[in-house]
Amino acid sequence: MSCIMIGETTQRAKKEHRCNWCGQQILVGESYLRSRVVFEGEPQTNKLHLECADAAAEDYREWGEGYMPYENERPTKAPAQHEAGAAEGGEGEHGQ
Image 1 (tube, rainbow, N blue to C red):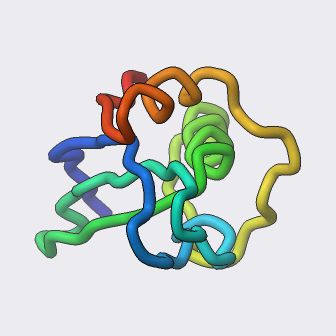
Image 2 (cartoon, one colour):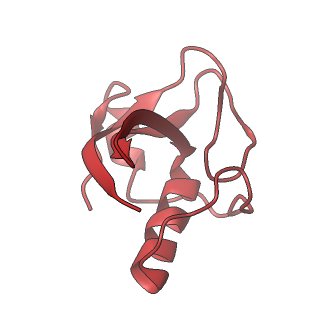
């Protein structure tokens, strides 16, 4: 499987979305990570709660593999590293 990252931004939801990690709703006004990728030759956009994005990144660092969408638990602790970007107007680059 090949996955090429095109870009990531932290955004504030203007409408509800579904988190690709946990499957729960991303509510209007909530900050989330939007990533654009090419997965197995097909472009796609993923939207994740900030804490789910951190869990997905940690999972990848540990196992070196992607994840099955909607099949993971949402972490209970909010991430500190994303808060500044979201508070500064709703968009910012997510650096990892």
